[in-house]
Length: 383
Ligand SMILES: *[C@@H]1O[C@H](CO)[C@@H](O)[C@H](O)[C@H]1NC(C)=O
Ligand SMILES: *[C@@H]1O[C@H](CO)[C@@H](O)[C@H](O)[C@H]1NC(C)=O
Ligand SMILES: *[C@@H]1O[C@H](CO)[C@@H](O)[C@H](O)[C@H]1NC(C)=O
Ligand SMILES: *[C@@H]1O[C@H](CO)[C@@H](O)[C@H](O)[C@H]1NC(C)=O
Ligand SMILES: *[C@@H]1O[C@H](CO)[C@@H](O)[C@H](O)[C@H]1NC(C)=O
Ligand SMILES: *[C@@H]1O[C@H](CO)[C@@H](O)[C@H](O)[C@H]1NC(C)=O
Ligand SMILES: *[C@@H]1O[C@H](CO)[C@@H](O)[C@H](O)[C@H]1NC(C)=O
Image (cartoon, rainbow, N blue to C red; front, side, top):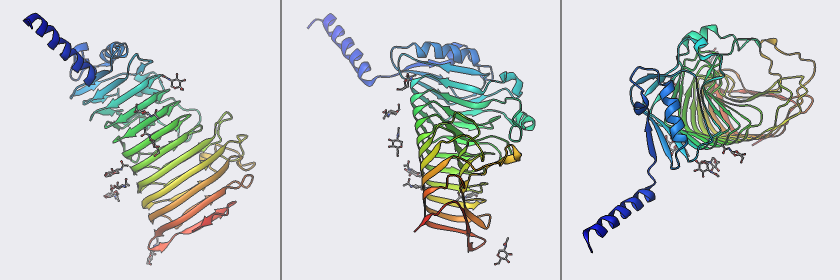
């Protein structure tokens, strides 16, 4: 064999190997003009543009270090699977008005096969915004941006990263199909208003596993149209616990079905497992197949609560009962301590009573004694 042919064969073999291992092409933002402590909005936009057009799987890299980022939307569809890998600390502007009232600081939208990974932190620097926030008691308040908007994504994984001190909700999941959050961290002070952890709406097949959420509002909340949601191995606290709802405030809501919460700990939260609907609404959707199992409560204010007269700050009229029908709900093996004497409250609608509610292996104590159970418009099956 002559040496020319040998070289050609070995080059061919090398090419084949690289195809088989399918290394993703790396788009490092340092190559797009990003510098430490600098604003990377333009570099991210440009790196995303190239990575999204790549015909092979691509990876946008944000290296270690501190960077600043303004409002950004990274949009698909992309040609191939795409990953954003963050090892650095990315900071939002402190002044909320700099985000132009956009719903979210960082949006990832319309992508198939998207991964967000790394050990990095997205720091919303919310302290100034929290002082201005009155949205929790008023319907007419200034829009304050959330950290993340994950919109219309399919087959997505969010792993490893941390969302810190968001100005508003940390994460909003909307219109997604098959999205997994794993080894994800959320951190904000207990006193930060409206900093819900992960809010899900109009999405199907959402999994949240091995995640710690410490924040000032709901840990995980399900809005209308949430289906087949699984929460496994999650720790919440401080915060307001795991919530379905609130539902029934708006007219065009869709049903909520298929929610499994398993092997989770709620630690010092203001509510544990909660389903809340507004009274006297025209909405007639159903909430069904809600399963809560192997949950540990540590000093939780309302460990188990269904509240169909949810009406904070008198924002509603209590003229009639809720028309939202709740059925097929199980609370199984819920153990630990309650911070209030009424540990189990099932306050269902007098118009459409709850059906097929099972309470089994509930072992909750308040100050050393078994908690009280308050029931309205429901006949739970006890075992
Ligand atoms: C996601 O899946 C839905 C339903 O299959 C499809 O209509 C939509 O185009 C997909 N989105 C992307 C970005 O691939
Ligand atoms: C869900 O998305 C993950 C990550 O992209 C993918 O590996 C998996 O095959 C998807 N599952 C289904 C049922 O499509
Ligand atoms: C999400 O959880 C469900 C229920 O455990 C499981 O069937 C599904 O495969 C999980 N999806 C992913 C992408 O891990
Ligand atoms: C739950 O967490 C434990 C310890 O952190 C881990 O060993 C286990 O694999 C996790 N379970 C799942 C389903 O990921
Ligand atoms: C349940 O969670 C605990 C504590 O996080 C963990 O140690 C354990 O492995 C988990 N069990 C399963 C089955 O995932
Ligand atoms: C609850 O939180 C406290 C304070 O953060 C912590 O010391 C404790 O270990 C936690 N308990 C559990 C069971 O996670
Ligand atoms: C807790 O129990 C102790 C002893 O049984 C009692 O003296 C105390 O008043 C109780 N505290 C509350 C808040 O009920």
